[in-house]
Each structure stands twice: as C-alpha cells, then as structure tokens.
Amino acid sequence: MSTPEGKAWKRNEQLKSLYGITAEGFEALNEKQGGLCKICESPASTNRFGRLYIDHCHVSGKIRGLLCSKCNMAIGLLRDCPTRIASALTYLQEG
Image 1 (tube, helix red, strand yellow):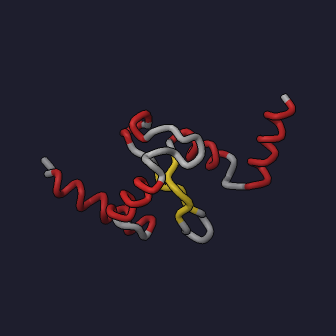
Image 2: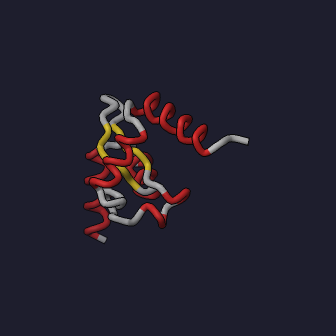
C-alpha cells in the first residue's frame, strides 16, 4: 500500500515531468485562481477527483491556467484552436 508521502512524491514527479511545475507551483496557481476554473469559475470541489487540471499549450508547453474537467475537455475537443472556439461562440450566440 502506498503512503501519503509516496503519493505526494509521485504527484510532484508527474507534474515536473509533464508540465515543468512542482506541486508547490500547482498549489500557488490554484490559490491565485481562488480554487476556481479559469473559464467557468466552478470550484475544484465540484470537479472529478476534487481538483482542477493543468491546461497548457501543446505547442509551447506553456501553462495557461487550471481548468475544470469539462472546460479542459471542451477546449481539447475544439483542438485548442481559437478559430474553432470563436466559431462555436458565434454559433451559440446566433442560436
């Protein structure tokens, strides 16, 4: 069975490996956003696993912010493409 310290170490290593951020950096960003999704402002507690997800540019790797699972999935399904996202917005506004 893994210990809480082991889980924390593993999470820290995953964050550093995938996003170049430490667990402390993640927590600082989470605090800066008030524990809310940067798009819809839903609290982390209403999210799957009770946390927000790191959103990053798939080209540069730069972290843009923390998102709830639904917002993260939505922009991913729109391929992180501003033109597609703008088209979706226009579509919704016209409907």
